[in-house]
Length: 270
Image (cartoon, rainbow, N blue to C red; front, side, top):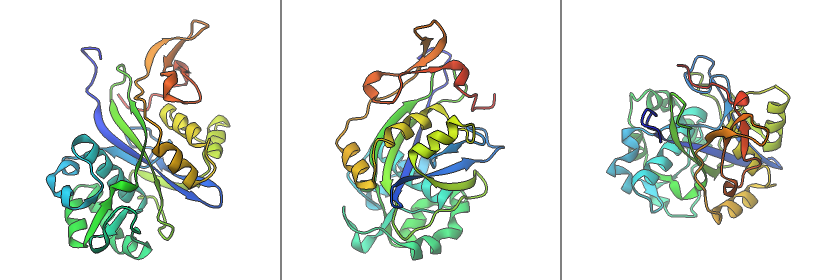
């Protein structure tokens, strides 16, 4: 990392999946006035908060995680709740890997808390504790790890996770950070971007491309649960024609290894 590069902030993004009947992923449209990926179709996600790493989560989560991994997984579920209303949690009385997640009744009951949690006016820890719930961190499958290139003014150290969506829960945008919610097949989202019908930034497109190789939620979960994740830090260089581009490692398994710099949107306002 160059001496003048901004320190990347630990972040998490979640790909909520469902079969309807074919594989679909939840995408939200970022508000046009937001300072990152304005107007783009993205997966719910954002930076970790201090509360995402507090010791209280040891008693309020299913899954054996600690440190940065614990914080990232908590943030992924918190962001999904804030931006879409989907909550990946279990009753504390029925905790344990493989146990059923809460349904639409609990998600709707907690709906009014989305805004206060998002604005950090209320505690996510206390919301879970007060309602006798634990976060189902064990349902998240580590899917990708991207670090923003050094030359960007805002940088993120982002972990991508896959998770099946509880079948009874409905998703809706928050109206603040997100203005639309859509369930899309990964290939349809890519086609929309190619046709100029949607703005989708480079890491999102690459992860959509990898997900598009699967036809169902079980197929995706089973495949990527057993695959390792290669960290991607795009590097500026030139392609075989001498044109400026970003390079990503081939071993990361994405559908391309270079991206023309002219296609890389300036998603962070300077």
